[in-house]
Amino acid sequence: MLIRELLAITMPPGQRLDINSGVARLSGKIWAALWRDDRIRPTTAVLIVHPSSNFLGHYALPGLAERGVAAVGLCTRYVGNDSALIMENCVLDIGAAVAHLRAAGYSRVVLVGNSGGGGLAALYQQQAERPTITATPAGDPVDLAGLQPADRIVLAMAHPGRATVYTEGLDPAITDEQLPFDRDPELDMFAVPPPYSAEFVARYREAQLARNRRISTWAADQLAGLEKHRRGDLAPDDLPFVVHGTAADLRFTDLSLDPSDRAPGTLWGDPWTANFRPASLGHLTSLRSWLSQWSYDHSRANAYRCLPDVAAPVLIVHGTADRAAFPSHARGMYEAADPRRRELVEIAGADHYFAGRPDLVEVMCDRIADWSRG
Image (cartoon, rainbow, N blue to C red; front, side, top):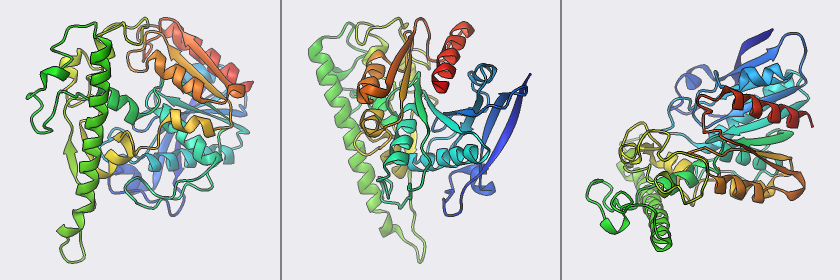
C-alpha cells in the first residue's frame, strides 16, 4: 500500500526567506510530499523539483513509489508565484530538501528537474559539486557552499532553463514595451504565414535576443537607481514590471522547425492570445527576479552551461509530442553532459504533461526508477 507524508523542511539558519516568499517566510519552512510503499523501506529518494510549480501532487509520485523508491515532490519558497523568484534561493531550497532526505536515512538521492526545473536541477548539481556563486546577478550575497550533491540527476520533459526558453518565446515585433500592439511588421510571426524562411528565422532569433538584452540593461539601470529614492533610513530594494509578448516562439506555428510529433500551439492555447494572456510565461516580474530568472545573459540556471561541470550521471527524458521542451533542447542538454555518464530516452507520443496517456507516465516512471537504482 502506498502512503503519503507531508514533509515540513526547516530552512537552515542564515538562509534568508525574503518578503516575497509568503508562507515560507512566516514559517521558516518549505514543503514536500513523500510517497512510498509501506511494505518496504526504500534507500533511494527521487526528488522532483521546479522553480515555482506545486509538486505536492506531481503525476509521477505514485508511479515511482510503486517501483520501490521514495518519491518526493518539492515546493520551493516561490510556489505558485514566480514574480519575484530568485533562482539562487531555489538552489538553497533544494539543498535543504536534499539534506533533509540524507538525514532521514536515504543513501541515494536522485534529483529530477521537470519542465522548468531542468535548468534549476543542473545549476544545483553544478554548485553542489563545484561551488562558485557568492552573489545573485543583482549583487545580493548568497552562500551556496556546503550543498550536498545528488547522486544522479534527471532532466525530464525539460528545457535547458527559463531564461533560454523565455527568450525563444519573446515577441521581437514589440519595440515599445508599453505598446504591445504597435508592432514591427518585419518581425511579426503572426503576420507572416509559416513555413518561415531561414533568413526570417535568423533575423527573428537575433531580434528576440536583442529585446531580452534591452530589458536586462533597463532592469539593471533601474535597480542601480533605487537608492536615490531613499526616505531616511528606508530605500526601495526592488520594483515590479510587466513584459508583454512571451509566447511567440516560431516553433509554435511552424512544425518544420525543430520537427517532432507535436501539435501546433502552446501550453496556454493558440499562440496569438497566449502571447498576451497574463497566466502564460513571465508577464509579471521584478528587477531582481528578471536578472536571476529571465535574463538570457545573467541567469545561471542554464543546463547547457551547467552540465559540463557536472560529474554525476545525467538522464535526459524527452517526449516526442512535447510543445514546451523541443528536440533540440534534449539534444543540447545531452551533448553538454559528460559522454561517459549520460543517457537520452525518448518517449514516443508523450506531450509535456502526458495528457490522456497514463500509460506513458508508466514508461517514464519505469525508466527513471530503473536508472536511479543503476
